[in-house]
Structure formats: structure tokens, C-alpha cells
Amino acid sequence: MEIKLHKPGPFSTIQDLGRLDFLSSGVPKSGAMDTASARLANAALANTAGAAVIEFTYAQAEIEILSDMLLAYSGYGGNFIQDDQTLPANRPLALEKGARLRLVPDGTGCRTYLAAPGGWDVAEVMGSRSTYLPAAIGGLAGRLLQTGDVLRASTWERKHRQLFKNLLDNKRHYPQWSLKPLSLITAGTQAIRVVLGPEAHRFTSESQQRFLSSIFEIDRNSNRMGYTLEGAILQREENQEMLSTAVLPGTIQVPGNGHPILLMADCQTTGGYPRIAQVAAVDLPRCGQLKPGDRICFQEISVADAENLYLEQEDHYWKMTEAIDFNYHSS
Image 1 (cartoon, rainbow, N blue to C red):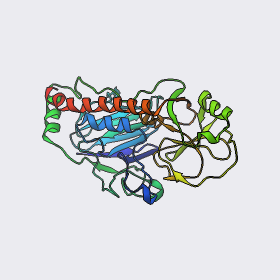
Image 2 (image 1 turned 90 degrees about the vertical axis):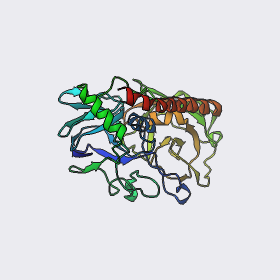
Image 3 (image 1 turned 60 degrees about the vertical axis):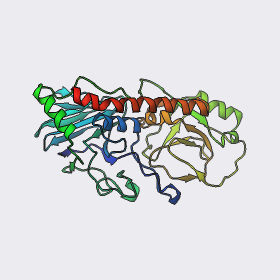
Image 4 (image 1 turned 180 degrees about the vertical axis):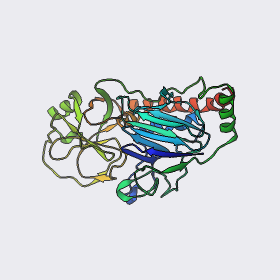
């Protein structure tokens, strides 16, 4: 159960849900930028949520199937195409040896996740298979995927073999069912829900209002560590330095130049800039699909609302996973 990358795409890595046990030692979480789509791709193959996936950024990839296998993909970076036929996302795909797939961008988001049965077989580093490029750890030799790389699926269980056979016996490459996305990317300006941060009071009242009423644009220098937001300049009440304190993906810091920075998966574990807000966990996967030039605005919600929205999303996810075994036997 192997694939070969003939074109890896401009920025493709192996990711899972990240490494959480070493934050106190300064090791970033890393992991998928859009965890909702990564988990959905895994769910379609009855994998655990944290199985390793390929994160394609900006599409333009091409792969060859080296042996009969099931794959599944999810996300908003593009669509996989075989022989000019678009393969649907969010469901298992039965692919025969020799098939060639192209990942073609669709302009909605920028990241697509490809899952294999049991996850992609790469070594764990510090409890995770996620690639962290600055330290060259995790994934495949701690680097971007390259032309000629061969990746192997971890398992090929009976349920996978049976579904593959059932689909081909019925002259189909995928089942009728599909999974409902956990988060939706809409056209135009993205409204991102936030909880005000512990240092929000350090900003002038006008800047606090400006933060919640302005439209910001993702700067071209943004990356997996964080997005610089161009737009309204936020001013502090006093130009007072603060001690470094904990930050995590979704934290919005404001350096001295007044341009907010939205921290993402590869962000540092501490920072000395005031934290004006924290993105609600339910909306952080949507942020993972943002690309330079995209526009966002912020909507304040309460901690209780943020928790309830997250629990609703998790309830939807777990209900879907409970139905997977039935779907596999009925396809």
C-alpha cells in the first residue's frame, strides 16, 4: 500500500494533531493547520483522529498509486482528479495500482489532507509524526516532501480490504455516503470568533473597538508560525514591556508596530507581546485555510459560548465516527 510523489506540490509535509507533551521545554505543537479536515480525512478511513496525513499546501501535486489501496482526502485546497474525473472528498476512494492522481486547486482555501489506512508510516519523534521544519524533526526526515518520495500506509485491515473489494465488484471507486465537514469555508471576508485576551485592557478603548470592527488582510509573509494582519493599527495605553508568557495556536499578539499577529501551528510556546484575543477552538481550523490576501474580521464571544461551540463540533465528529463501521459494511 504505497504511493509515489511525482510532484509533491510547493509545500507538502506529513502532519498529525501535533506534539503536546513538550511545550514546557519550548517545543512547538506543530501538526495540521486545519485539524478539522485532517480528522475528517482520517475518519473516512476509520483511522484514529491523530493518524499521520499528508498536508498539501496550494495543491499542484501529482501522485501514483503503487499498489491497490484506499485513500481519503478532505480540506479546501483543491480536488483530486483521476483521468479528468473529480474524485469526491470526505469518503474512502478505491484506487488500483497504476492510477495517477492530480491535486488541482479550487481557490477556496489552501490546504488539503490525504489519509491512508492507519495513517502514513513514518517514525514518531517526541510522541508525534508531525513535521517541524525549523528543527528538521518528524515527518519524512524532518523535511518537505520531494519528487520521488514513496510513502507507505500503516495498515490494511480486513474492513479496508472488504470495502475495496465491494466497491470494485460494484464497478465503483467510492461509496454513496460521505462525511459532513466539521467546519465550512465561505466566500468573502471570514468572520472569526474570538475571546478577548488577558492583555486586551492594555490597548486604548478605540483600538479595542477597532480590533472588533475592522477588516484585516493576511500579509504575504505569513506562514505556519503565524499570520501578520494588515489593516487597522492597534495602540497600547502605555508602551510598557511585559514578561514573556504562554502562547499557543490561535493567540493574537500585537507587537510594537500595532499590526496583530495570529499565531498558528508552528508558533513559539512563549511570547512577550500583549495578547489581545484568542481564536475560539472551533474556528482555528478555518484559520488554517487562510492564505495571503484573504480578509478576516473578528467577532467577540464569551468563554462559555466558545466552549459550547467546540463541544457541538466534537459531538458531530464522534457521532460520525460511530457510524463509520456501519458505512463500511453497507457500502
